[in-house]
Length: 170
Image 1 (cartoon, rainbow, N blue to C red):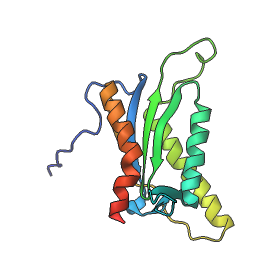
Image 2: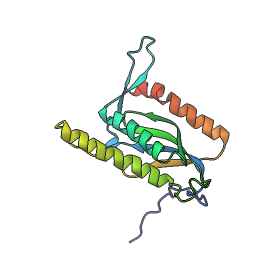
Image 3: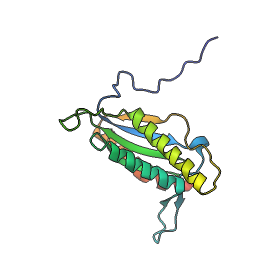
Image 4: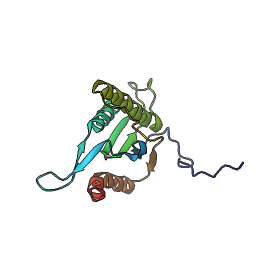
């Protein structure tokens, strides 16, 4: 039986263990709108994001993971949309005397940790509030290696403008 040809999900020849910046998108399970709401109730009528309980958990996990790996990782920009999360993740691979004994986390380790910690915290929240537990994330995630400053700036702008674009979808 012939298997279908699949598009590779990694940049050919790119060493994902080296320091770099990445644009990452993580989607919710079945793209359900469980992370936030896009509201227009500000005085100016501009759209803004109101996080749900799950969205608050995801935001707290992002802070925890960034703090845990603060010697190596910065989440430069992110937005928690209703059914997905966009991040710019910068990983440095320089080691100094203080950090030489610790391993630099890979992109997949970072995203896996965000997804698993948020899911575990969500289960705890659901159990303590008698809420039905549902899956949080889709399998895998999308990533793009940011290869130049212009690419970085365009992605930053896209993340910042995403709520304004999405308000039309609701």
